[in-house]
Length: 460
Image 1 (tube, rainbow, N blue to C red):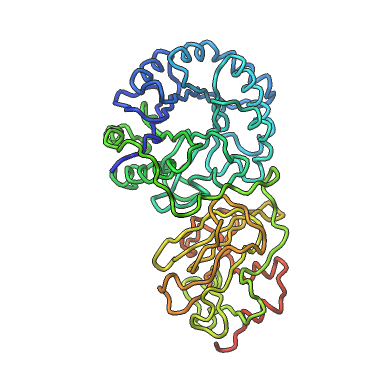
Image 2: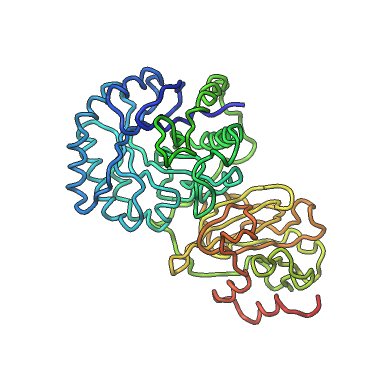
């Protein structure tokens, strides 16, 4: 077992244990002398991030940026002398309603930092922020970056299963504005996310279980060359509100696993094509403007089969199964299309009763998030991968039976409004607003006669 060196420690004020040689380490409210001490331990190649905890002031963004520089310039110059690989954060977790002012603050701060030969971490956004359409507001900030600057993001998960939820973990894959941008995850770990979970890992899982989550998260980070790494919240001084986040006692095991990690080897030639880059799109997340049913060959006789099997497990109120009237496996391999324009947030085989799953996230005209999950697929179409944009009616896969798990092929489909579940989160979880798919399609322009036929109560 090993933990990627992309996993580093988030330190408040100071830490007395070993740090090893991670790719990145974050220091909060520290002196230049402590930065020099950390540099001596982590080596010249580790990027050290420094943040000062201060109130976020954006009433006059340009003036506030200049004031921020004046407060910290002497410390930054002294810290810079400990080694070139150091970057400095500004404000932390700015909400979307302050996006315009925060963008101006960071553009000004970047200009001032570059004039001093300093590197910046911008953003440091909380999970779910910015919402997808808001990234367009930050284009001037992203354009002002220079080599050596990073966009900072926070990445927290509810539990081990939530690591597969790209809405919470690895969300940069869903943001076309971040394609190719250098990123660092300036906080990560277990936390409450969208109303679920617990603040911290302690008391919720064992140390070994949490270490296993860090191993899994490190494997995800290793897949992306533009992600420097992530710092785990938190070590060092533990204030009362952060007690359950305390990783001081387990960090020695992380460092040991750095030491036993095998040296990187050249990647073998892959027999499959490389993952596609996100499809270029204009700035901003496109709104849903057209809705279609996911079964491509709608000239055939489809119906919703809850009426045949009887209501169960929240069907049809929170999920539906679509079949051909000929039953059995007669719809095996039938093509499926994206029901609306959006970004793919899940596309892989989860095994068992889930089978292959495709999940697509869109934004409706009212700005509400809409997720469509299609399960038990026989195949996923070429080029469908998290982060890829699709249009309504675009091929995404074919109907299956979860590799033979079910005796009859069918499409299990779910529509979720608002908070975004992971690709295999149960549709019975009341924390998420699963709605009846046929009702949603009906309210978004699909012919009422067709919906009524598909959901008819005729004894079948």
